[in-house]
Image (tube, rainbow, N blue to C red; front, top):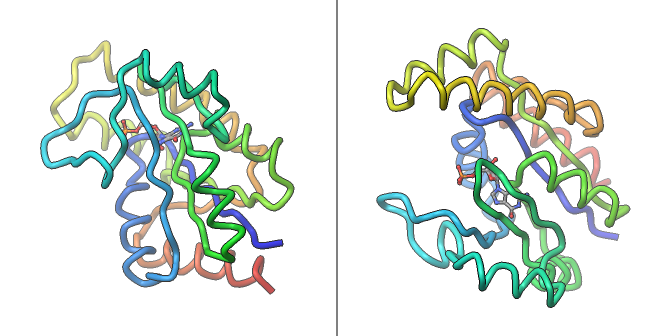
Length: 184
Ligand code: 5GP
């Protein structure tokens, strides 16, 4: 069966940049667009970055069983469309999920063909520096994020692979190699 690749990583680890670069180099991969209850950030678009739902709409979808997995992260809900993944795998497409570690572990439970890749910061200190370097968050919010990071790193031991994002190009190559080896 076609493998389903799931990428997670702590916030501030540069996961978005790594995935963007991976998709540029591997246009045959399709990134699943999740549903979320969080508000749109400037520059984001409905149907491109996420499908933005109200909490009520989201919970209705949960009840209907529309999500392969869903989780609450930082006070908002995020979920992966079951239909998108099932359809994609049926059509023999290369599907990539970019979700948090709680969601990734749910996918691992449900799908035997799921391969979980965790993107690590070079060090916890480096990550703290990056989060502070953004200069946009309060100390309280930084502490909350750092606690989340610790929890996520705990979950990382259940992943099949970890990739250190010390350099974007190198990290992307490592992911490409993992995928190549898993697809044979
Ligand atoms: P952001 O709000 O910064 O876009 O995303 C916050 C977190 O939610 C990130 O760790 C991201 O990977 C995760 N996320 C995005 N979509 C999903 C999803 O469908 N399911 C789960 N479990 N997490 C998601």
